[in-house]
Length: 180
Image (cartoon, rainbow, N blue to C red):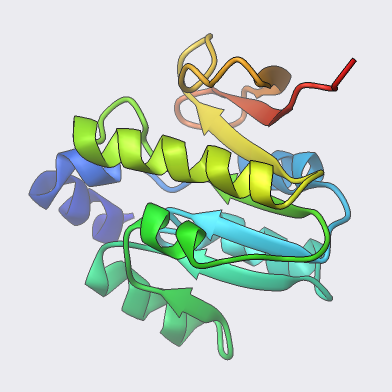
């Protein structure tokens, strides 16, 4: 926790949390991801969601994205063989393409990100979801509303509330709207 707190104090717009996600929140995010072959974790931080992803989806390829160098290095040390990308989420997403559906599992603090970074990230998530049909974004938020306003061809679904997290959080899924 002290590592996350120090990052919050140095870079509040990029960190967004005082405490790591609880194992209960991490588990619900993995459940919402579903059984997929590919997972891209955005804002992996100190690794609580990463741990559950590796445990519950051991055969899926996993790319962990973390912009902060010290946290990215901690992930590399903690999870041997993990594909850790120390870069902006939108840069990584723009370079990925899969032939079958993927889950983008995000702990990014959209409401506190600098506006240009938030807009670039949201746009790249939507481009990725369009490029890889059947894919989904799993995002949590501390507020009782969708994490961000998505384009009209997408829809948000609130999956659950996780009360055993500090603070309590909602897990949301963003997917393409079905075509008529």
